[in-house]
Length: 132
Image (cartoon, rainbow, N blue to C red; front, side, top):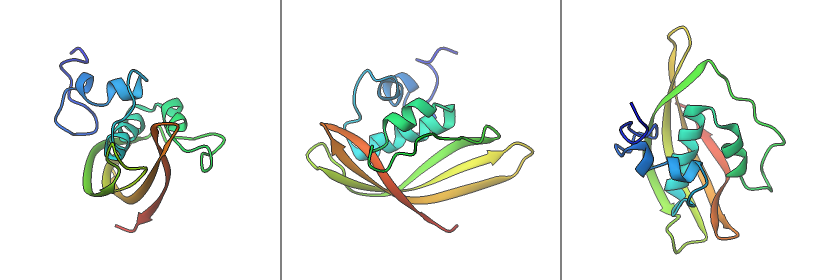
């Protein structure tokens, strides 16, 4: 299946090529904080450490990022957004991300993430995890 036929990992329902692929590939910036959140989920789902670090605010970005290769992120539910439009300078996205761990264990992560515009592009600042 070509990427043009494959659904985006962020579970938007759109084809990957029309959703997160151009943002993750650097072909275009995320137009909103929610679009950046979706592209970051896609990067977690595909193991793209470089994009995750690139899309993180330098003020809060870790020096390196270790991803658990045994975790498979398979669904993203956007719970709410505040700000984060093309006309805002800050935004907040609350979401639930679902995963499976090798061996069959399933789980979810709820987070309220904050975003800022930096040099005209959205970047992830930080997040508060909510117990599930």
